[in-house]
Length: 319
Ligand code: UDP
Ligand code: MG
Image (cartoon, rainbow, N blue to C red; front, side):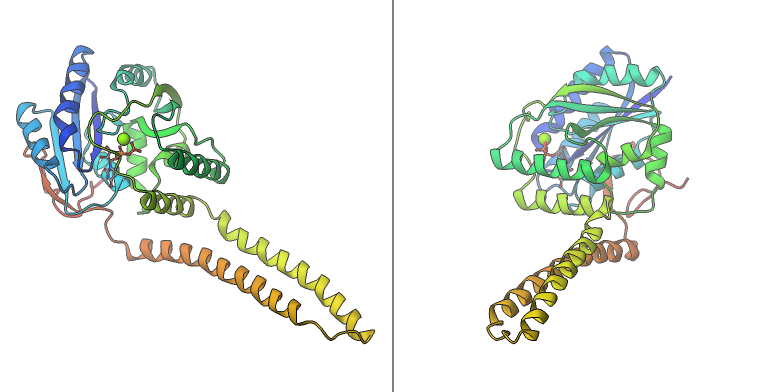
């Protein structure tokens, strides 16, 4: 019988673990789906891991790991994918904002032969105005950069074992899970869902962490900002040709005296262009530097007893 692994990245979610494990277990038993739940605590500073241990004691199909520190949601998703043994893997938030009722639909589509089932948001749930504006802007930019509609996509999706293996074999450390499944291709279906209110606790994203997430993802997925540098250069050259002609004409007709304003403006504009360009190049340089160091994406410090093998440390499944 086919097994379903559910990967749940959890960061400071002590209030959610027990409830989420219970809700999912009830649903999956009722649907007669053979399952395992994998909670990956992302270096939580509250009792999240203790709660995972407790849940694992009650249900042997609950597994869990703890990171040595906070490595971010992408890292916990990928650690979960590494640990998952199922024939299909669903990734979902552990705050029940991704409604579990959609799981049977995803499972059914997988049984019909679909290899990726994307969860598509019909509404974005409750968010602050500022959050909504920035998220909207970010997704518009991302969508045009990677030429796929990202606005409604989320990290809630089902992946076939084949797709999971493809993602796990990617050598890069800076990943953007949400877009990578589009990139990977495969036979894709989608299910719609409405984002729920958080069961307990509050969102882990601060404004600053969202901005960082946005910049990292854009630079990890597209080199278009680099081409922007070329565009800026072309604009500057065109501008300087016009100014050069004007300056020469003035000089030759003997009226070239008060050119000071032009000089200041030119220095400011070109200086701005150069610094912006250096910043963009710097971002890519930073990405390359991080990738070249080849450090592990996460470090696992603890796992529940039902996870076999020596997975502590920067463990990676050997294929
Ligand atoms: N999360 C994580 N590491 C982090 C931040 C968040 O694993 O550094 C998890 C979190 O526990 C939750 C999911 O990612 O299961 C989504 O986070 P959250 O609910 O805070 O984000 P939102 O739903 O507001 O986008
Ligand atoms: Mg949430």
